Length: 575
Image (cartoon, rainbow, N blue to C red):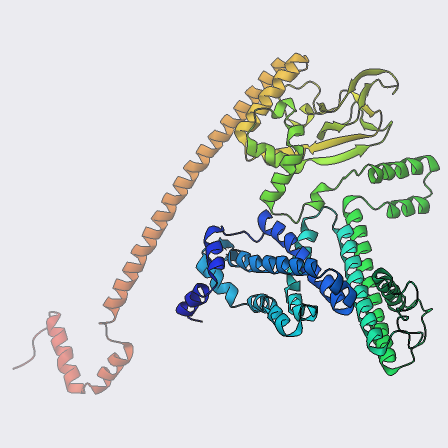
């Protein structure tokens, strides 16, 4: 389609549509406004799906409320028309960027099947009322073509709701109701076609008392259809061919519906079990292990109580695994929104960079302790620190009974053990016994995770070490002399390292010089060898000398010899 035809298509729309299109902003298909508009479109679509077919099969319903139906019909048509306007103002993603150009949006929309279906659903078939009369609602069956908007609204709601499994069940029940409703309407229409009361299968004769009422007609038809589609039985036997065909079709529909329902419910149950397994650890394996290993019943009871506490109170211990599929930045934002306030209470982390806290938040590991369980004991090696999120912990004596202090939510302990502070008299050993009084939720931060994060923030590491020194000084657990000696030893070590670095640089320089001299000597030798090769090329070869000796005559040799002897100072020959 050319650009001119696109412009003509958009210009040929009615003036109302053109005016509305100019005033409306472009909607984001993933935004709230578009979502609420989809939910609004559920009502006219469901109205046409349920009411139109009911009016077509139950004439009394059509005649009794004609004015109301006409008003509702044209309100739904107006919403259908506005939906097309919304379609012309709904952007789309192109290379990940939302397109807001209305010309491009319109050009893309008019080339889709959705545009053709939307136009077909608004074809003014009501004009035929002038010939057939207003009591023919079957003329509005083309409004069913807007059903894809209903499915789109359901899909968006399922992704947004906090209870997707409950919504899936409700959606399944709605589909079952619509199918039974349509089947009951068709049953009543078939009974009217065959004749009411002709046999026991069709709807009874309305002349009988009670069966003339509209409510009774619909409820009887709905009940009869429910019996057939649920294959419960207890229905009259069909007597005519049309009745047999209707029953066969319903039985086939019931088989397909039963399979669909079972599949949907199995999927919902599986998703619920999968969600539980993702949020809470599987206790069945642990129980089986304890049974096979003959763990004593008291300890087994504690383990089961711990799992029960997690399940009942919705405690999660594997947040990292739950959020692992999110992008790193989005995962960090979620963790920050949940845990940053807790981490910022720790004194050594106050006034740190926001990016450092964000990375530390991703390292927090939630842990839950049972009543009477020790978090740490005096003398243990401290490899992590703890932040109390919920619950109470007691600092107890070695007997486990005497309490020195009670720690509540928001407090922390063990922070000094994960920072290597020079002069710390307690080293990395725990200095107290910490026991959980009830069920306590803690955040754990390990030394390795802190070291990994601080490797990228040396300035923050220095600030945290300084705060740790201040805390140790207040507690009188910092050996200043030992710290000074350690600092001096570290400075001496660094000085030696600098000396070794300097010596290494000197050796590298000398080695480079020797390498340069070796390369220069190699070049000179190569040049001399090449020069000698060029000089030796002018010398006669041994084969050439031998050929020259064979060609010489004896006289020539004597004369040459005489000349040679004369040249050597011998006596000259006779003249």
